[in-house]
Amino acid sequence: MALKQSGNWIHRHNYNVRICHWINVLCFTYLLLSGIMMFLQFPELYWGDVGFRGYEAIFKLSNWGLTWEEADALGNRQWGRNYHFLFAWIFLFNNLIYVGWNLRNQHFFKRMWPRRGELHKDNLKEELNQHLHLRVAKGDAAKKYNVFQKLSYLIVIFVLFPFMVISGVAQMPAFTAISPELIDLFGGRQSARTLHAISTLLLVLFVVIHVFEVFVAGATNHIRAMITGKYYLPTKEKI
Amino acid sequence: MNKKTGTLSRRKFIAGAGAMSGVLLTGCETDIYTPPEIRSGLMGVSDVLTMASQRLLMSGQGLVKEYETSDITKDFPAWGRTNPEDENYQQMASTSFTDWNLSVGGLVNRPSSFSLQDLKRLPPRTQTTMHICEQGWSAIAQWTGVPLTTLLEAAGGVKQEARYVVIDTYDGWYDAYDMFDVVHPQTILAYGMNGKDVPQGNGAPVRLRVERHCGYRNLKFLKSVQVVASVEDIGLGKGGLLSDYNWHWYAGA
Image (cartoon, rainbow over all chains, first blue to last red; front, side):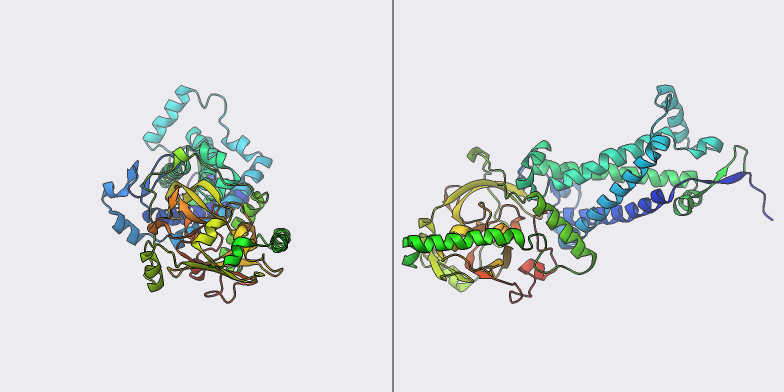
């Protein structure tokens, strides 16, 4: 028998969180891919209501090593549009269910809402220091989310996700009739498109850090916990 | 061409208008929430969700935002096809479209043909709107033309079984529009752009404006208007050139 490790199994994620998490992984993958496929066939960003090839752009992919024609050849907006809308709907329903469910069982309040003292700058400094040194929480501390997890999850769920949906909707021609005010709120149709892209980059950044942290903290244990719900909690002693 | 259209009798006009209000009524009762053919699988579910939710939000048939003339974009792009190769088209273009005719047929009470002059004699509508291309660009232009309903009334109004208006163009494009879009006041056949004739690159001599849709459904170089009960026999039967090639039919998103 192998060395006996000190630790025990705890229940970490409820089944709603687990199911919604993996549906979101699928949605995010497709939304990002299909978004890129569309963007490649119009690889510039503008500000205001107006923007077209030849108009003053605030971002041009051609300045980053890919000409318009090269980008166009890589893109496929028919596929992109079909799958972007399909997965946007799945994404929307998935997150409405997720948010509704976990508001009701107080998951957000119990596990994600920062506790008193957590937002104090000494604590933030301390936790940031642990993060930067890639020190992984052990024992009781590993049972709950740390303050940066809490804040990033809350921002992603309650700020970036709604922002993606609304800035996406503000690009749709039907909304010039349904709610032109919404388009104006973003500063114009092209501004909505640009902010949609910037918000995408923030989400990609989140995913990169999130996945990186999963590997730092033990990929097998964390991925297993997100699939089965069971998490192996190491105790403070060295394993 | 058709001189009768200019001097539409009062009785016939009322009959036509009556038929149009019939369209309005059936437009509300019949299916304004689904495309003519629903794609299979999840893609069809997604299409219907998009179309139904937007149509529900637009059920009041509100107008799209109209801009000031000072907002008009200089150098409005001439995107996509800018010069149809069609021989007839080229010949008409060489004579400033004086020979151009728009046939209006199918399920109308009086199939007719309209010259550019005929169209210009009908009560016009001018609107300054934002054109949004599915590819990503947008620009603002002022369009002047005949509301599609006015044109259909001039052709005697539509028959009871009318469900879609199919438009063919000189660049080989075709698309079908349901009555929800047909009766919208800003759905016009534009012969003027920014106070001048529509330039060739933007669809001379007449292009369609369906403001609540992506640019590609605002067909250019119009050739004919046909009212039908079903799109089965149009192209591959899915209600438009792009939907025949697996794009979603509804383009409000």
